[in-house]
Image 1 (cartoon, helix red, strand yellow):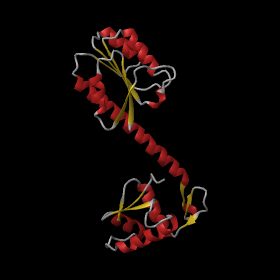
Image 2 (cartoon, one colour; image 1 turned 60 degrees about the vertical axis):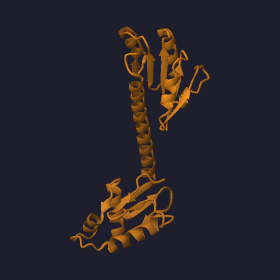
Image 3 (cartoon, helix red, strand yellow; image 1 turned 90 degrees about the vertical axis):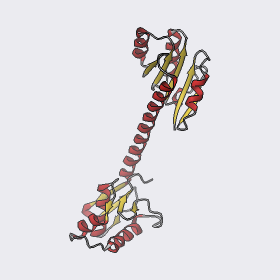
Length: 232
């Protein structure tokens, strides 16, 4: 869940806070004052409601919010001319809102930005997991084996290795029974899925700690199998 630090400088915009809190995918925390000891690095973004505050006070709040953690900051200032907006953009604000925009429009724009931040975080986490898993899972074609971390190599038959290699290369896409059959046996698909299921059974017996709850080779019902590249 994305974390938003809510900073209000004049205390007159309580309804902003409650509307942000209405989104279940945002953890909004009210920060009445930012100090040098504030835990800025625990937030993914900030929304500064400056209201009728002086431009200098808003700039000061911005600088405090990003002093230890440079992250997206949205700013609301009731009376905000072009020069004020340009200054706020120059110091790093993502968007500067003023009273010309409806409150619901502003809140939605902030929510969309936070949703994008959350997706980027999730994508990075998935990529990290996948990269770590790739370091732990290595196919060695010369020896028809697979290495799982620092464990001894697991040796496979030719059909087992080819099956695993096909699934691994296609991940995260599932490989159909038809594609597996034609690639492994080099013959037209005859719907003899039990032959593929038998190979998968032997593969799981060698790879999985619990064949009843496989983490490497997953079954895609009525379709085929896939290699779970995000296994843990």
